[in-house]
Length: 473
Image 1 (cartoon, rainbow, N blue to C red):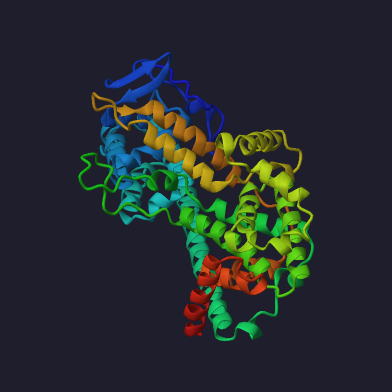
Image 2 (cartoon, one colour):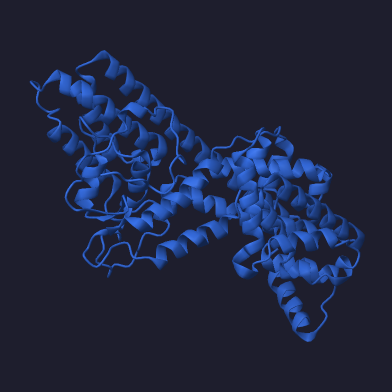
């Protein structure tokens, strides 16, 4: 039965073979369609629908959607085990006397399915149980033909390469965070000696800083696995009868690291503004970051743009009225209007659609850049997840919901594959990633030191902060 998923053409992998993409004449029992779209099914039926046979290969959008959403109902390693069992039993791969012609027809399709899984969801294979099942099935496929041995080897090498790169990225993040922590400790030990460098002394060109921010954004985006969006919403309630509440579900660590980067950038901007003693210097820093934010908007880097605006809107910064009186705020007002949260971020969503359209018709790699305001993307996916049930009343999986989830995640997959076209500046990158940032209390203290408390509440807070923070030094 035809399937016609709602986001045809969103996904692409190097190994796509159109000749393999045929559709079953009759759907597996337990699948339900509406106007040729798969809308629901039992877990078993959906698993069967994933497994190719001699005359059938599933739609690639179905593969992505099911592999993305199935982890709400079954562990990836359990799914892999079932897929391997179905492949071997249905196609008689476990039978040495099986018809060689039959194996020749089915083997490329099974390899294609495994290739799509390892390329799109490589992090699933950090689980040794996944690797065991993968090796068992590929060993059977490769045992009969040199062509398949080569294909299996290429797939395995690609997977190992992706997992190695991920491990190296995670190690690099640990080092960056350790360096940032050391610099913060040095700042606390010798506050005046440590404050010798600021952003403007490293680079006073807003265009270059915006480009380096885009490097960081695109690198961190590229390591977020699509499954992390689903795993971030896995139910943890032990009273939930749904199988989604596994105790050992994988943390969405790359997604969390990206959210932490947004927070760091906001606090870095606030720190840079509150640090200078002179009002004129503070005003210059504000105007500099307004220009950086504007260039981020032009690039399509909405996440850095929002982080900078958030930093400027933090109370320790926004209360500096004398400083703001020296700033030409017209450009800032325009940027705030673009990111105005009213009407569910209507202005931002319009700008995002424009950037997405520009990306689709892009003539240069620079025009392809779309970096969404990430917290809002997460919020949209969260409400999509919360607003619709995972299962229907008859116990079937609500696949209409997961088509929509996959549609939104697949758009993100397109954005995260863009390579940054700008030249890297190691010195600026190092500063952005490791420069000490103040806590909220330290920001308030610096803010009160720059422009004294205006009322009794602020005076009480200032006294409290001084006694608390200075006693720690």
